[in-house]
Amino acid sequence: MIARLEGILRTRDLQSVLLDVGGVGYEIEVPLSTLASLPEAGAPVVLFTHLVVREDAHTLFGFLRSRDRDLFRRLIRVNGIGARLALAMLSTMAADELAGHITGGNVAALTRVPGIGKRTAERVVLELGERLTELGFGAAAGGDAGTPARGIEREAAAALEALGYRAADAERMLAAVRGQAETTEALVRLALRATLRS
View 1 (cartoon, helix red, strand yellow):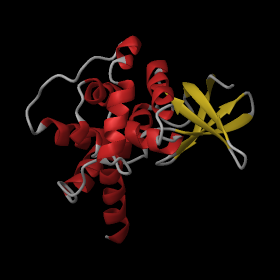
View 2 (tube, one colour):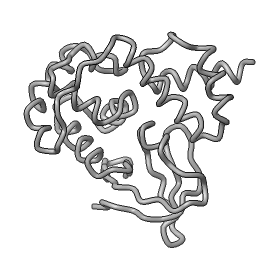
View 3 (cartoon, one colour):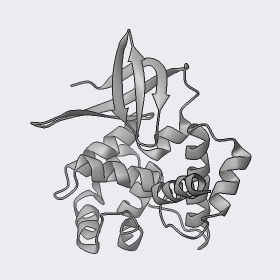
View 4 (tube, helix red, strand yellow):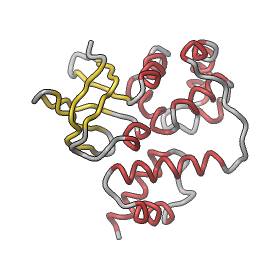
């Protein structure tokens, strides 16, 4: 099992990064929350990783914090949640927010993740709700109704900046698609598509 990699960040795109570790390039799939926090290409990076081995592929998933990886590992133990869906959940919302919705039993918030229906969300809450406190995650704090949308926009802006866009350009791109998506990943994709069309 490859649990941790330390190396030089070479390239990144919306779904993965290339990490040079002693001359060996590791392609690692990362959630948008990790992508948004990565330094510029050429900088040293430490990623906590989880290796998924299937008959047709070996895929590395990486996270900046070990507890984000621990949450990912808990998610993929839930029946019906594979590695890609768990990564989508951690791309849609930050780990603390996601865990807060799970421990708080907020099924409606979990169904905002593409691919998560009500039954799957209920299963996640049932199987993980109380166990996530072991990882140091607590219930989500209350907030005003506008908070989730602003949080999504902030994460989307950070992800666009991580892809090389200037802050002003990222804000302009997001303003053009404001209110058209309910998840960070969907908002970033819409903003990129709109830019390519213009």
